[in-house]
Length: 292
Image (cartoon, rainbow, N blue to C red; front, top):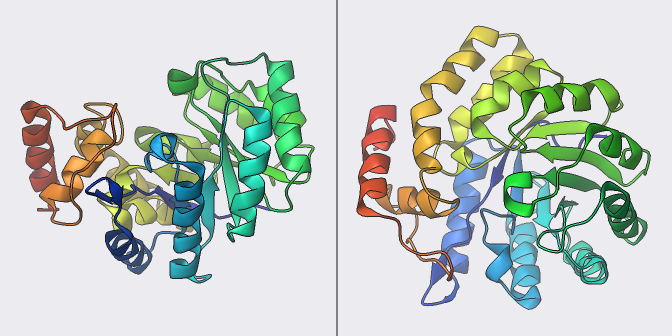
């Protein structure tokens, strides 16, 4: 069964003076839910989990779980390039109350498809909550091939995949091979409608940080049969989506949230403030889209 159908937000983690700003995090969660977001993804790539300690990551997920209080699923980023570490972190995030886990492919040391199957099987064997795989070769160097997804879909705890390869042909083959109850989510905001047309269940979105209602509606309209309405949102949002990826995510989206007055733009190195040109582009596209 799918953890959710619709639009899940890959939520930023706000920092203030080097520490997690929980008050602001709570405000962002409440705004997302009020705008119709279907799931909260805590401590993913956009949430800068890679520069958090395990203790911080667990605390942030636990806070999200308590704040959401069952209104929508909370999916916790739990990926690691060390299988033993990933298993331990997954267990802790399950104990923190996460409804599901998002596991990015091992990065830097990488692995073969055979090794990846063993890696993810170890994760799934050691928790009792659903796991969503995450394929984003541009960041990790490891692609999840369709046949690999098919093999992993046989594990009862592995229920879906966030597909961020940007390869529509691979997406089509993935959707062709996996069972109907294995959820494929778009990991690219500019490919949501194409993936839905292939059988996808929704999106795990960066765009939703700044346009949660429209991101939700893009998916909802598609499933309601209003394909033209869904497509219009997708195409209208394309310039804003491009601006949100003008530099490495989540630099632009945090800048956009500051422009909107929703959050302060603070990062942990090696991420840093965007170029002035990026800020001006974001301001231009947020205004053109009607957000500011």
